Image (cartoon, rainbow over all chains, first blue to last red; front, side):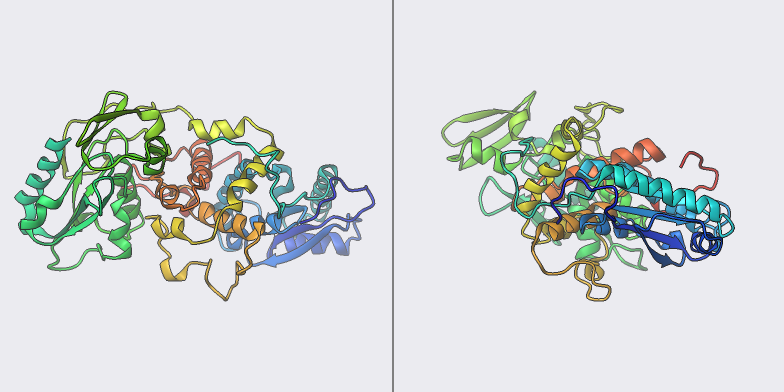
Length: 155
Length: 322
């Protein structure tokens, strides 16, 4: 619901991170313990497994104004529940390819695999993704009032 | 087409002893409207019709109003399906909502069904229709006074213009000869391409304008044969509360996203959601795009083979690249 087109580099944006309890949440913890410096735009939500990640969590966040959504879990073959992330990667990839169709930049969504020991990798993922979101700027969101002038009339 | 109507009745007459009821179409409140028919007496089979106004997908009734799962000593349910409808039946069998053994399927090769709203815009005065049929690339509507002809492009439902499965994929008896599809395999859905030719910003504005009309009547969800959660739909659940009653753009957008995402890799493109939409929103377009993504990524098309499983309900450890 925000209208500002782009953000200044210093402005903090809102990235919602959905992290699996067993790997990536641990990875983020490791990064913290090791005092790896990270951008501060990320807000973490802990989920039991990426298999719990409903693609609609990401969609809802993006529709309601989050600037980016990051999903991270155990590496494939390393899922705590054996197969959760196998389901997840199909869902996440389908969602990623679908988002541009409804006018949401696919760059605002990312999924990655980070294990509990990979603090360094976590730092890198967060840094890269935050930079990417800053390049895209604030989420323009949806307009409550429609712009008939700019509309397409396809059908 | 009159002969197909008769063939349909005759076919069901032959097997009626094994059937509990027959679901088909009959003439509605006037000759322009077909309506679903539930026939329990063989003497009433004469009510059945088949013409290009029979646009309803009847497979939704198999789960929503009837129970077509396997039961001991239960008679079969007879159902008429077009090509698209048969895919919905297959999808429901795949997910075990209905049982193939309970069904007697009369498949009808279909050249397309009419979008009444488009037809009425072209010819608002149309009434007292005697017969309606498709001749080549035209719809011929014979009234008491004269025969009106309309190009198919102008009067068919949007889904019919891009139909790749005019012939039922699953049936016990095929009524009439198989047809050649209008669009061939491998051709991308033309309407999806039309929107994708525009920029990200324009696409968002397009959906804003379309979805702004949404009144959240949930007709699209109710008509969808694959929206099977019924009373447990997350749209109306209070705990967890996914969607508020506020009627803003975000809520409308998110409602349609829920429907689309839940149908990813399952939607058979029967177009019911779009046909029943009172605000004429092209809601099926989102599902067409999702199907395209699933086809590209997982090489799967919904509702073709009762033995397979929708790809988002399963996984493959050997997959690479994603």
